[in-house]
Image (cartoon, rainbow, N blue to C red; front, side, top):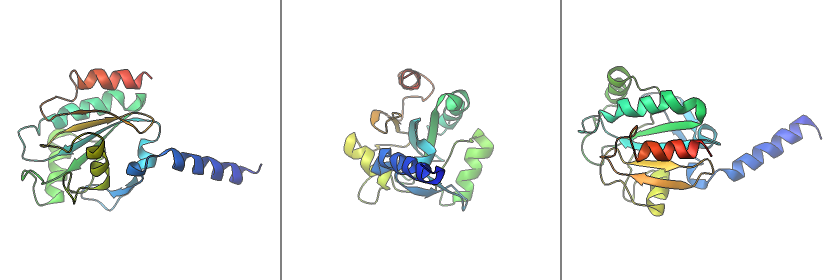
Length: 175
């Protein structure tokens, strides 16, 4: 077979392996850069987090960044989704991006503002809620396996780089 045909077949196989709820193209926070979630998460363990700049749990950005730094090369991708669904996010994407990047050193992908609960929730959070439960506060965490299936949901009070969240991440990175 010709290389282009093989590449096309492999691309089709990868597209089929990606769950519909990850087959999204989303804009990065305060940027025009867009990311395809299938490409960004392919073959990785994924931690999806709804965030807010003015929440008591905002300090979890530092824990999320530590996870990203420590485990990205082992196959973890952290994805942040700022939302004002709980009335604790700034109206400015630029201010939210500055808080994440300057104050907490966030380098993992943060996406543009979106709803994470209810009828207007972005498609990723709608699918995660259907498989589990919608976020009931900021900094809910969803862990998705390399196969694209939801492993667990963790509430806002569960710090990302401590057990039980850390235990689940490490276990699934080893698989």
